[in-house]
Length: 228
Ligand code: CA
Image 1: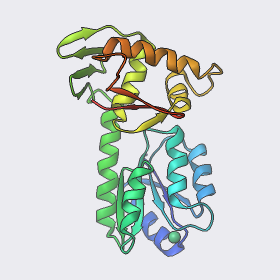
Image 2 (image 1 turned 90 degrees about the vertical axis):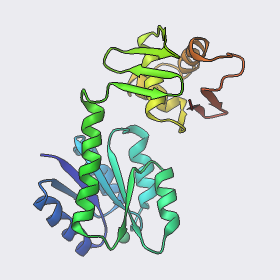
Image 3 (image 1 turned 60 degrees about the vertical axis):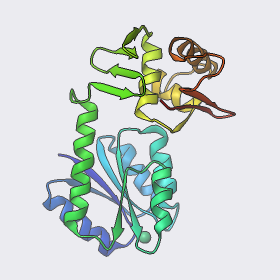
Image 4 (image 1 turned 180 degrees about the horizontal axis):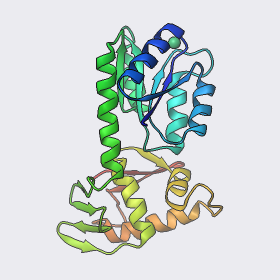
C-alpha cells in the first residue's frame, strides 16, 4: 500500500487528514513533531509522499523538509501553509518541497496533490522516464546515453550518474557531499576530491569552453550547480 506521512501537531487536523488518506486508499503514518517525522521516515523508507506542517513544537517544517531532502531526492513533499503566510510557499519550495496546500483545505484537494506526486514518483522510478532533455543535452535514461546537439558523448558510469543527478535537479546547488553520497553511495568512505576530479572530466566532455564552464558552474565553498 502507498504510504503517506502526515506531520501535524494539531491532533484534530491530523486525524482529519488520516481518515481521508485512508479513505483514499493510502496508508497514513502519523507524526506530531519534526523529530518524530524523521524517525517514522527512517523506519519506513518506502514512504512516497510526506505532508509537513510548518509550525511545530520542536523543529519547524522547513527544517524537517531540508533534512529529508538531504538524503532523499525521490520522496514527494507537500507543505501545509497558513493562508496568511505567503512567504511560506516560497521558502517551502526553496527548501525542496514539491508542492504546498493552504489551510483550510478540502480532503479532495489534498488527495489530488498526493495522487499527482505519486504519479510523478512512479514515472521517475519506472520506464516512463526515458529521456531528459535540457538545452542542447538529451539523456536517455534507459540506454544510459547522452547526446549534445545530436552528437553522442561517451561518459563513464560515474560521469553519467553525476550528470543525471544534475539534470534531475536543474538550477539547484548540490553540495559535494550530496553528490558523493548520491553517486557513490551513502557508505562510501572516499574523499570529496573524487567529486571534483569527475566534474573536471565531465566538463571537458560537455562544456563549450572548459575554462569558462556554463553548464556545470562552481558554487564556491559548497559544490556545483547545473543549468542548461
Ligand atoms: Ca502546527
